[in-house]
Length: 117
Image (cartoon, rainbow, N blue to C red; front, side):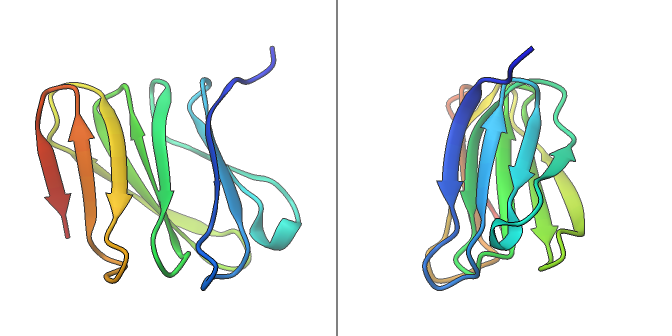
């Protein structure tokens, strides 16, 4: 069964070139430097939103499962992830601060906005 993309994006110009996609099958993929595809599993439901931080080292994902995940990805594709919970409905949008690589904002169907730092 083919995956349906929910979002596709590239890292900021200041960062090393990478791309990511969110899919209906709950994966995020990263193409470090255009090489191999890496899949990062963690969400239990559809990924709604993705965003790279301003340094291009962290990829955040928001999901219907009400969680936010932040994937710290090195140049080889190795990663660590952090799950953040607090929303009571799907995480529909997220954006990193354009000047601070550690601050993330999320918006949810529960009608709340959260700032994570």
